Image 1 (cartoon, rainbow, N blue to C red):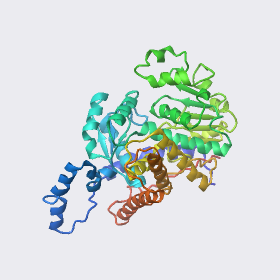
Image 2: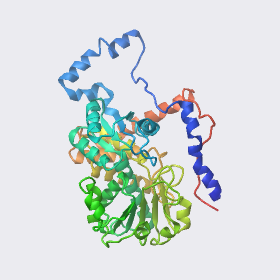
Image 3: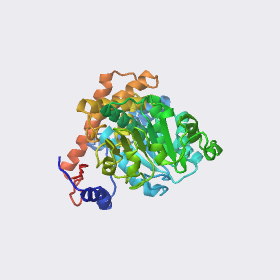
Image 4: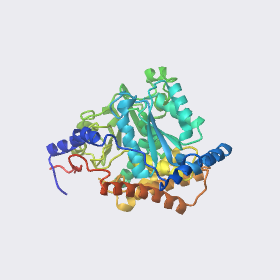
Length: 460
């Protein structure tokens, strides 16, 4: 493996941000809408539009379920945000959030064969936001909530899941949590430890970690061996400041009571000491987490640094401090722990069987499918979770999710495993092939400077 210096790594790590604006300006956005039906003569327009279109309209009016047969709503997702918690950038507003939402739509299509549309909403009031989503929901087969500040993101998700009969998913919660669970399970396989035995430190109590802790516990982690830190210190039953806010943010208070069986006090240093797994999803670094804290972890330490765009510390620093396995939220380092591995396949799966909702059990099934795929490829320290480029993993995850929906009685369609996998794989392969053909014919031009991004974590 080619070795590089720390200086070279830093330069490569900064490259995506350095060229991003020029690439975005070159393409003037990352997505567009194209027809999917045949257009040959003037007569075809009379079928796709007036007068022929009246017939399916009337049939849908009589039987609303036919909307899935006659329109693309069966395969469409609204990516909805108010722009109040965008990446690690904070409340930058709906317009500034649009590049992220377009990027998500790109991943939905390329990795999941799902048609996704950015819906940026200039409304911060959660009740009004909920009403807007409910009002536009007939256009879509599912809702992907994105980059919404906490604690209202939890409330919005719960309300919409209760009041809509289509899948609603908050990717910053459920997607990142599923990827983190998968990476944790894969890493534990490599180091030979069990989820029920390990001590876990969790830095940050944002949407991702709130859902992540819930999934870890549901998958078998011992809540008493989990130590969670917010901006003021370790969560424990003595945190009167959190208890005073429990009506506004009941999720944090719940973890104060259920986790930290040792009732540790202090901050990140005290939380991390003597743990086997560190999961950080806090604020961008570097320098948020210190080398000596990593050195205080147990042998064969697992460290996930998920802040974007810059992790809480550089991965080579964690390795140098003694971590055996390190992952980040970025695609240019090994072990990317990112919801991009999850949400395209999850929605592909729920769409295959027209599931009414997405459960934690379906998320755990997705995580296990990711690990099973990686195991077949060969788990090792720099590969505890599949890469986004391993597109064969997405139909497998979609199938696992769909089968779990059927098992839980949440699917409108009861299909076989083979039927689900075959159609999911076809949808994904068609999307990839269309994009390749558009690039080959020049309708999608090369980026302006022709740079291809890659990085190697091995340091001299």
